Length: 140
Image (cartoon, rainbow, N blue to C red; front, side, top):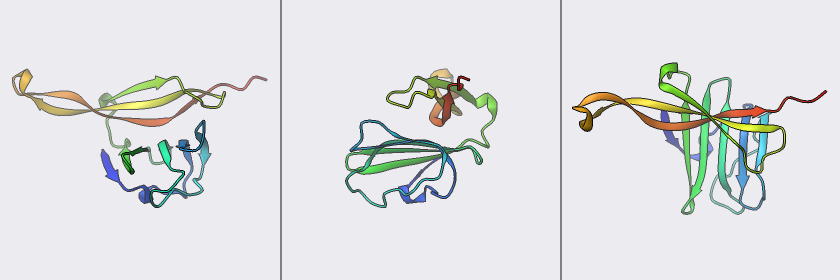
């Protein structure tokens, strides 16, 4: 289930895995099961260009984008989504610390009527939610 929310609805008192990329930085600030210090309450400089946060305990993902002078924030609750409606994806990171090997996402499919398929119900992609990092094993 995806819901559009305001940025102040993201809880800061829980441990997140993810990143926030601030407008005045060359690389994102990475969280590896850390609490957020704070989030902007309004549009100020610097601002968050992009962010993806994953709360593993509740299986909730938060997407933050700054577009046309405002924050677009979405909350994705993946706990209630059946496994057969999820396709996992991994992507190579850009400008992340060396210990982060890949970014993990889950694509969620919803059943919808399709007029091109004789009005049968078909699965269509609904959204893709961030679900944390795949980290490199530490060498001993």
